[in-house]
Amino acid sequence: MVDLSRRPTFEKATLSLSKAQFGLICFAFTANLVFIPSVSTYVMNGTWGGRSATMQLPDVEESFLGFSVSSYTLITLHAAAAFALAAALLTQFILTHRTVRTQRVVAAHRTLGPIILCTLLPLFLVFAFSMSLWVIRTPFNRVMFTVLPVMIIFAIVRALVGLRRGDRDLHADSMFLAFMLLESAPIYRIVMFVVARLGGQGLAPNGEPIDAGALFRTVIVLVLLAVGYWSCRRLRQNAFPLAIIGSVLVLSLAFLPWSLTGAPY
Image (cartoon, rainbow, N blue to C red; front, top):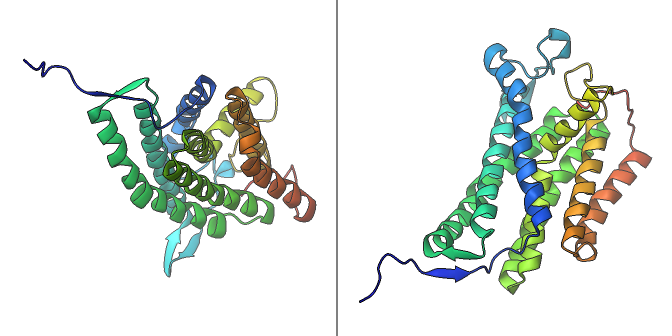
């Protein structure tokens, strides 16, 4: 007699993340809690930034895809799209971070993948580029905020190449890269709020956690990515994308106007 209560299981065959990488992923997603004050302020007052008028981000009308759209609307849509994509990617990491997986888990992973690729990712990219190209004004921050979605595209393509080749390490490391870049904003805010608690400067005049946000955000996420890759002894194999991001940062600092005392908007 066949025991129908037993579900078929499969060996782990998709991701090969280290414990440190998975821990960084969980930390990065949890860091989204830092946006609760910003979201509550927006819901109650309809503004983005601090609670006082002097700390609010400017609300201007932008021409987006032929339509006139409030910058607050673009910020809201960008935040919602980024969170939805992060939640879906986190679900994928959880589904695959097991020694054995049931048939239902495998099916869920395979079903969610195309949804991410064909729906959530394009939505995020549309609003991410709208932010960097239309809402952000300063040249340095515009470049650094643009390079993140570009590198997320690079990471996703790299992950698909790894999947096609059956290279679990390449697939895992590429998805780790995409997720950490996606979550660089909440990670940055968490770190800067800790700095503020220790007596450092906490808020810029427009309500952002610190001036030159793009600079510090990029440096922090590069360090965390390097730590994650070092933990699984694959730092050398993943040096190329880190070198691209680091090179863009260095070249932007060298050739674009920027200031530590300037607000990151």
